[in-house]
Image 1 (cartoon, rainbow, N blue to C red):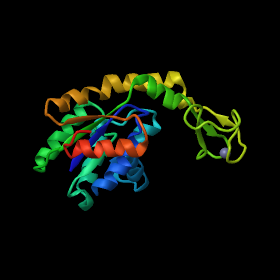
Image 2 (cartoon, helix red, strand yellow):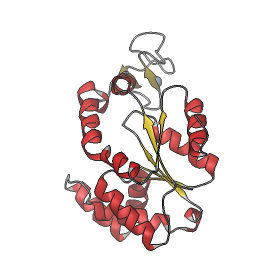
Image 3 (cartoon, helix red, strand yellow):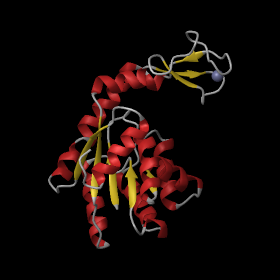
Image 4 (cartoon, rainbow, N blue to C red):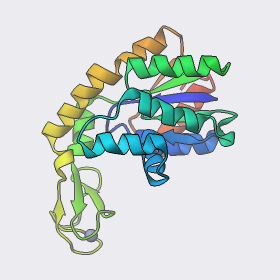
Length: 218
Ligand SMILES: [Zn+2]
């Protein structure tokens, strides 16, 4: 199966992608991992991407597309893949279609994780991280620490990352709406979109996604 996963920040996309890829025995290809791998291996595309990032600029679509193409041509992606973070705009989606077409392939589904905007803000803006160990993560509503502002694991001070502030989350959602969401209509025109609710426990969402992808009612 060749699948594209889309959804706003805070939908739990990375977590779902990992579980779904495992269940479907296909590689999980995330743009974040692609960038890290290409930069650490110092590929031509990696060096190019780094030069843009170092200058504080966005990496051009052609570079991202090139990395994705290389990855999709690896032997483990022969029977399919799950793309996470790519395509993130309509021109990348068009380029992906071209690329697949030239290899005689096509996408099987676009899984759209839906979560209400206020829920996204609540999920992200409620996160609190431990200053001593950033793997100690709490949530003011969903997994509150025993004492306000204090890490249960090590007693460290809990804080909210700048990236998680409500203002930043709203800005990221705005970028998602204007740049990424249009790809859902683009793929709807091809009859590929499967929409599921991303609310609930992680394993419930995975189950919902698996049955939606297999064509059953979620
Ligand atoms: Zn801690």
